[in-house]
Amino acid sequence: MLSWALTFLVIAIIAAVFGFGGIAGTAAGIAKIIFFVFVVLLVISLIANAVRGKGPNV
Image (cartoon, rainbow, N blue to C red; front, top):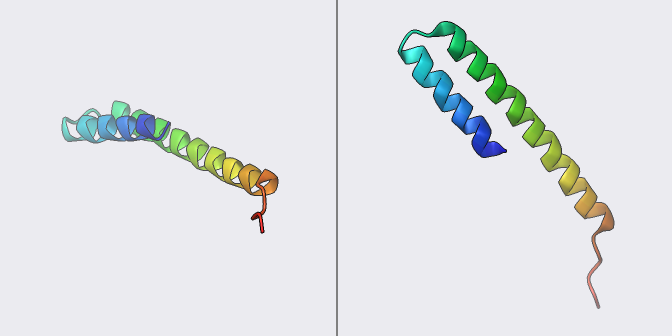
């Protein structure tokens, strides 16, 4: 998912360089949304792993 966000970011940068403002804005918006979805899923995954994780065997 993070690779998708980076791909859309690169598309946005390339489109901005060539002067396609609408496409660049849309691609940047999509990249931002995908990135924040990635961060939310990462935090949920880390919390779930911490909650059901096993303690050290002593």
